[in-house]
Length: 453
Ligand code: AMO
Image (tube, rainbow, N blue to C red; front, side, top):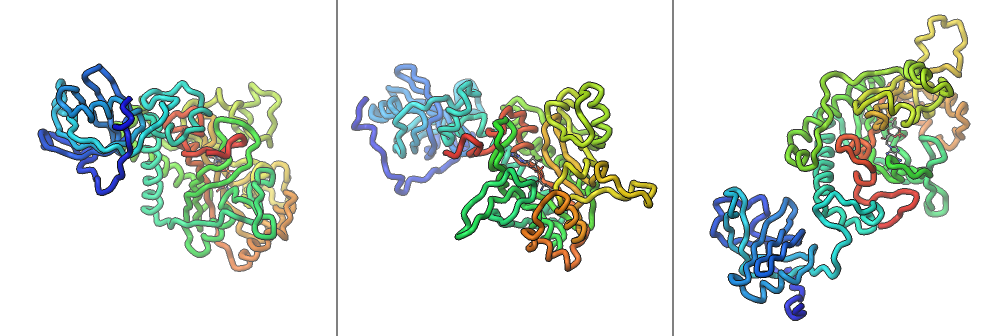
């Protein structure tokens, strides 16, 4: 290798004239400037085929020893994949295809040299273990497969904002350093907050509820933190949640919203990412009718046919319902109040004999989980908006209600009836794009074993 040739240049005032997608027939014989990184190379001795990738796609550089300055030829021969370069060159038509172009280089500027061959290829759906990939995530994210996944993730986020904006919700942000648990105490990450203990937010639950007083309809797209002790392919310690809350509605209205939201997302991705879906070999789920709504009680009755040990009041594990549902969306509704957090409203009006005291153990709640097969994507409910009921529930669930004083005091000022849900963004991406592991639906996953990169 001629070391003299391989030195890095400053970017200086080098700028591209064209992104890959902007090169067209009109540019044939024109000199253009392209910038990107080398995603692959084929070396046929006296001819090199170099794929240069920019933000939008790949361009082919054809380097014939006889046609280009010898220094330029040896530079491109010696540069490793992942190196960044700027190239001034002439556009020509590819031999066998009139709508594909290649660039004959005239001049090259090396912007950044890769010192090592990467441990995995950019093209393949890597057979390399996920931990090797995650250890070098920035390089891993250059792989075709993940490029497409995150391009679609971007469309999903835009379509979520589109949906809520069209339905008059406003986007909010709530604190991520908080004083109390909302979803059950075990999964909290404690932190130091000056001289006292605080926690990373498991959910924006109480804040989004409070914000319905001021804004009626709110949503937030933000991280939630869960100290999940288990190693599964569907749990992260830091996940993105799409949290939604609305005043003057109940859980059934919010199921309608969630259903419409999912339909809007699928419609948008099908429209904007048709080519990307084809490249991934994926068809998004077809939705022809409303999502089925099955009650928790009916589901337990069904499950008991094959699982004698399952009892009414148990949580429903993914394993147990795996055989019952295919890859489809459906709601499990009306969960036992005992399985849901303290802020969830109970169903009291279905007891025809009002003189009879309520059987606490059989109390249902106005709640739902949205499932895709055996994967839980979202949960939501009608919330309690009366202070005395919240206090009762907190006591029942053994919570220290004094720690929630900052929240409870709001209820002296007429909190409106309200309902909402939280939708796991990575879970949704997993379901839509058929990802095996939730870690590939996020940029830098966090789990019990991983705090870097
Ligand atoms: P829940 O705890 O069910 O409800 O969370 C809502 C949704 O968030 C996603 N999710 C996760 N995704 C990846 N890794 C995790 N560790 C993880 N934990 C949760 C799931 C889940 O369905 N406050 C309520 C929501 C509400 O009622 O508005 C809540 O947090 O997709």
